[in-house]
Amino acid sequence: MIPKIKTFPTTKFIGKNLSFTYVNYRAFELWSSFMPSRKEIQNSIGNELYNIQINPKNFDFSPNTTFVKWAAVAVSTFDFVPEGMKTLEIQDGLYAVFNYKGDQSNVAVFFKAIYTEWLPNSEFDLDARPQFEILGEKYKKDDPNSEEEIWIPIKKRF
Image 1 (spheres, helix red, strand yellow):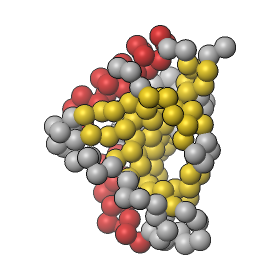
Image 2 (cartoon, one colour):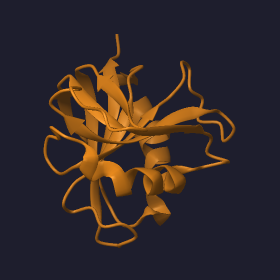
Image 3 (tube, helix red, strand yellow):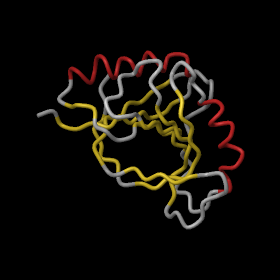
């Protein structure tokens, strides 16, 4: 498990969001609401979908801790925001980028390894910016050959 260390540029997004916990995981509800109306978004950049998670300060990964999840696309401007959608801007910063291959059945184990094995043994600490997955052209829902990029916000450990 060796990530690439990359800088993500400041990026604007338009999409929908929901607050929930891992116990009451509502990502299917969020994406089911977003996907039918994503074509209404103007000025989108690329075809990638972004599964963004904004954790509260000192997030402890407890099953009952609330966080905000976004289903979104990157856009060049906020000039037109479709009804029922919101805007989000992620500031530039350093990220550890992991490639995940497979269906969603093992993704929780993969994330656990990132946070409990790779991160503590790296030269980085978790940074207080959104984490996200980029669902590009190799992403295929529920397919064992699906691929996505997992972006974890990091900062150099001092």
